[in-house]
Image (tube, rainbow over the protein chains, first blue to last red):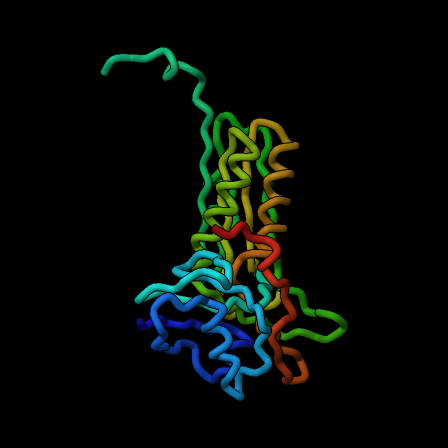
Length: 80
Length: 161
């Protein structure tokens, strides 16, 4: 299954991309996606358990992803 | 239409509006948007860009956001505040993109029948923005340096399904 991954702020700078597409085995969790990302040398400094959102809603890393999901890694927020 | 007794209860108006915008925030229009005949208190909070942060001279800020999500989260926050406050009108706006020193980056207008609920709602909204709104600050300094401002991990501050 394909999922879209969005990166923002500091994480986007690390990756050098604001959007990536991943082909994952069906039933993969968000945590497994993060582990795969961290295998990339540029993204080794990502936290092991970053905040994430799936389809615009904060989600747990244990959530199972589905075809076409939009997953975002949410760096520590600094609005206001 | 047939009238039913429960529909004759006093109407408690609750209105919550949230916006993410690249344009300067019109503070007068924001206040006007929450004024009601039933308002006894109208409160405006404005967060502005400071010229100094942690001892360094700041020349400007660029706000980045996950816009589609930020609109939803700000709507959730204002709706939560409205639910807690009861009768009220709320409008909150967060600006994104380049924001100059002294300009408003966030503004919250709240009106309620009495002042206590307005202060509570306004405080709740700004504190929740700080810990869960997916927005990031890129600070540009007078010496030419720039960096992402250290933020708050939203993990502990959101209810997850």
